[in-house]
Length: 258
Image 1 (cartoon, rainbow, N blue to C red):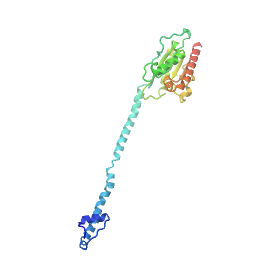
Image 2: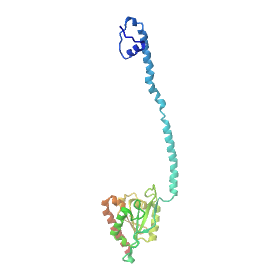
Image 3: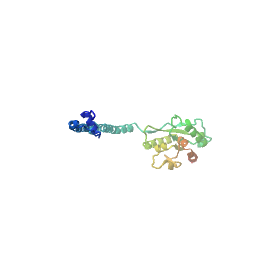
Image 4: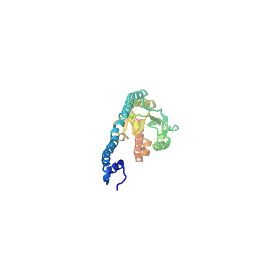
């Protein structure tokens, strides 16, 4: 007795490796089943290999590359125009107008009154030099050095525009500062802050080595020191800043007695 299978079912079982017992009466149908099996196998092969053939046809790789190269070229072409516009707008670094920090201060000896010029960037978010936590620290430092008693103490903001590079307009700032020193008849100039110092006095030498050195600009003694905002972030540097103020005080007294 044999199973009642048609040719398609027999072909499927042969593909699965299952051998069937066939009665002599079924031998006539076997050649048809055998010939049908290869036909089905061959029919499946194109469908199995079709994804490999279709992959290259669906890859639009050059399109994004072409768009990015166009945008890069556009930005490169606008860069010189932007730089030219920045050069035409004037100095990126500028000096503000001198303003008294302690307007009511009086010198005990008017004949030897010390006239200070204190240059620094305003603390972040502040409109006055003594605002905020950094401003309070600066106030304490100046009072500890007795500078609040000098009638000639004036603050000058070193203003930096967006995208400014320290030292990019250093020569122009030096001209501004030289004119300011003459106009205010400054006894000593104190520049506080690395960026302000680099803008006013560009140098390849690190600020840490220049700090605390007695310099001369336009015939007036000048000293570089750290700003109050930096000292708040680096408390151990306060001792060095105090030494700078003491040295500046000595320089100022010598300048006014000679």
